[in-house]
Amino acid sequence: MRASLNTYQKVAEKCSEYRRTAQPYAPVNSTRESEIPSCTNCAHFTNKEFCDLDLYDKIVEEKL
Ligand code: SF4
Image 1 (cartoon, protein in one colour):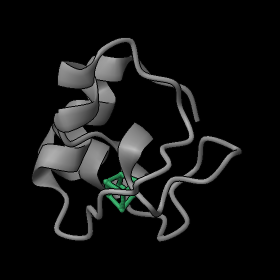
Image 2 (tube, protein in one colour):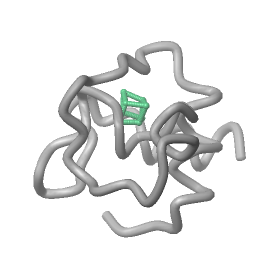
Image 3 (tube, protein in one colour):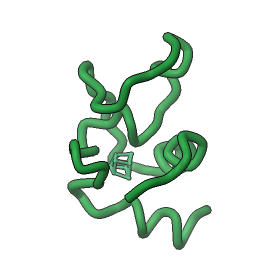
């Protein structure tokens, strides 16, 4: 799955399972960016850019 940073942030905002990880997979450009909830800094986001709970697509379809 590929999406813009903005979409990952919108999904994480709506996601009840969002869990911040201390070691985000995706590099962030700034401290501010790393403080914003986003799939890219969620513990459920895998290194294949995929939500291991399979929630991402559901949230995009139902809530965005
Ligand atoms: S990676 Fe999955 S669990 Fe984490 S915020 Fe995104 S949709 Fe939610």
